[in-house]
Image (cartoon, rainbow, N blue to C red; front, side, top):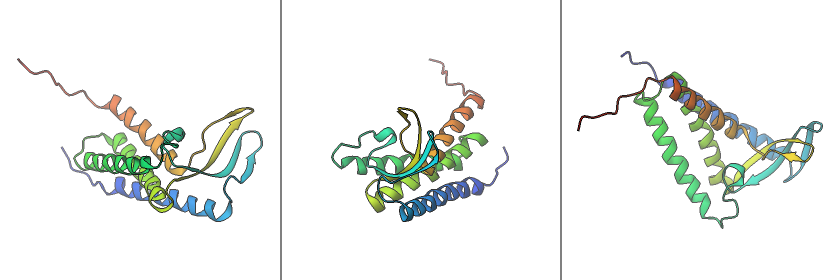
Length: 164
């Protein structure tokens, strides 16, 4: 098996982190909390909101302990994904996906450390239906997760049967 450089994967993680943080700096400098800018009428706004929880505001009202829980969870997942990239435990799609998740997760970790919550600003809606507000980090995390799933289907299955 030929060893290939892992640097491109970690550069993608850094680029994802940077894109996320730069977008949040811009939004925080231009918007007041809950201010909305209508970008596509009836479909898409930019708005500044804070999420102390996880996806879909999961555990947002948990009293504060969730900040530390999500910090530790993100650290464990990022370490595991980075280790898996280095040890070639994923195919190419999985390595790109893992790098995206690492960059996105670290972007949201930076928010929790700096602000105590995650900064969100993309709001999609249609009539009375609203998708939860999200950010660039979330885009990288979700895209990375899809790539990991695709990679899981593409990888040959390991034989785990053992003679008894």
